[in-house]
Amino acid sequence: MACIANIRHFMPRNSASACSPTSQTSGHTAVVGLQWGDEGKGKIVDVLTARHDVIVRYNGGANAGHTVVAEGQKYALHLIPSGILYPEKTCVIGNGTVVDPEKVIDEMEKLRARGIRVDGTNLKISDRAHVVMPWHKEQDAALEEYLSSVTAGQRGSLAIGTTRRGIGPAYSDKVRRSTAIRMRDLLDPEYLRERLRVICKLRSAELEALGVKAQPLDPDAVTDRYAAIGMQLAPHITDTVFALHDAIAEGKSLLFEGANAALLDIDHGTYPYVTSSNCSALGIPAGTGVPGCHIHRVLGIMKAYSTRVGGGPFPTELLDETGDRIRERGREYGTTTGRPRRCGWLDLVAVRYSTMLCGATGVACTLFDVLAGFEELKVCVAYRRPDGSMTDRFIPDARGLEGIEPVYETLPGWPESSTPAANRNALPANARAYLERVEAYLGVPIEMVGIGPDRAQTLVREPVGCG
Image (cartoon, rainbow, N blue to C red; front, side, top):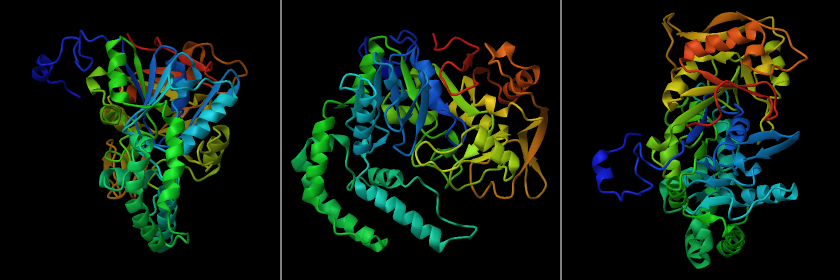
């Protein structure tokens, strides 16, 4: 995002909002997924957290899941940033998220039960973040069921394959405005009650129209329930925009943690089979209130192969034993839903597009160990259209990708090793060649390579963090 010099001229000289080379920043990083999600962003954020002070989630909701393995312990997080595992760091859930407050409380309690500190000092939630209410989940599930039944088998099937966590309906209400609830509203019971008296009546009618058999929503009962939740979360709810700019002014470094991934971005993904938020790096300014000119490093995360969950186009999908082998070796089942993921060869056309879109300065290649043991590997370097013409440009549209055939380049595989590599140079020659081919195609360096689930099983080529 460009900065306007004329505006800077009128800002106080010590303003945290000034985007200039003399701003008091020690380097800020964004971590974004370059495929269709599930790339292992949680692990990379966990590794990078050691060099940053504030970890910020800027989009999505409890439909996303980050799995982190630290010192042999596995943690599954959905809304709380992965940095919560470091007690001295501050975690922020930004205004661009939609928050299921009961899910947040559940995550907090589970973390505390395992000895992880979670309090109003190290976890802050934006007062502007929108709330996922119970009817959002019912709407989500009912609409998916309806669309699946009326368009089953059709070329224009309208079912998206959502996680049914209420994310889309919550974002819909955010845009609709008059029927939305924000986190700050939970702190004002009487204001909340007034809004819910109208909203509950409207939602009851809509759910009945969708075939949901339930008692009409009771606004007083919902108010009492969510006002109590508001009291419980009150120490965490704050104006995170000012909090982040204060942190920048104090010279603290920020790490932006994206949920979902660039190919699921509402504007730039494989529409309509996308999520409901801007989950590429382009969503950071709107989702946090921090201008893009503060971000000095964008680390794109990609698997060494491709996966996708739910409906939508997937040019390199493997519906055979090879796809099954990748799924089992990579434990490709959703953190949030447990659904088996669709698996396929690495689509470099798609990854190069999202690398461009996010302005990635480097790449982290995760689950690289999954590919060991294959005699040969394939990477997609172009698409063949139905008319026979070729393109190496990604088509961010579901209909545009219909009938596309991947054009593959075959690379030699490498055997599994009983001795983990200590660094990238210690990898087998064919493994290094695979990484070098990916770097050449993408035009950016691979800075990190994941060779196992634990945070220690990460080969770092460049210094972690940014200067």
